[in-house]
Image (cartoon, helix red, strand yellow):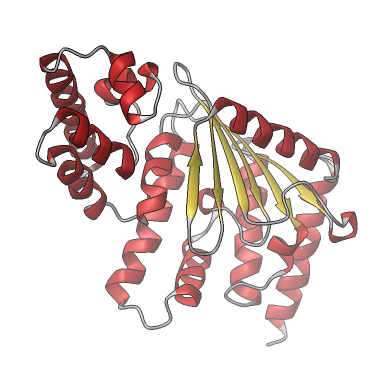
Length: 277
């Protein structure tokens, strides 16, 4: 299902939610209280701006006695998405974000991956996958990256741990090209990248990756991801904690001048290695 069509269905979801809520004689705040989200979030759901989690869709069905229509609509959209269920909402949100701040501890972030790098990561995680599955994953990742070249592209800040540039994903040639791609993004001012050196030791986000997103007319969110799952965080207090953790990461990075130099040095090492194999 094309992105535009998916958005149309989310808008239908919102229109139906408003119709059923008003039919039940509930305000946005009253429905929000019963399904454990704020009334403001109910408003965002109804506008098709914010997408509810599955458990929220189920609770809405229960409160409004809809016979499961909101859960079925949610599952239909997720089933047709090329992303893991826990990442679907994140992919939707990043497309409308005005600012994205990301920390990548071991792997180059999807928005900066080359096709060859994305393919190597996919095969490492799914060694018995069909070629069709692999191509779908790679294509969806490259499509996501187009937001960096849009006229309304977000500010994109990335903190890479040195492990992410020293782990030879796909081999030396693939890594050399991957790092050269990051260098090009930096030169074109599509991203600001800083690197945490291994020598920095312990830091504020020791497990998994972290992403912060800001929007024009929505509250900020945070997203954390480990090997097998991800969590989208909306609670303002928790998002504030995540923002503080990201600020602490900035303290231990190399400078914006030294970081590209470190990436170039690693790329040169990979090129040298590739030329001798």
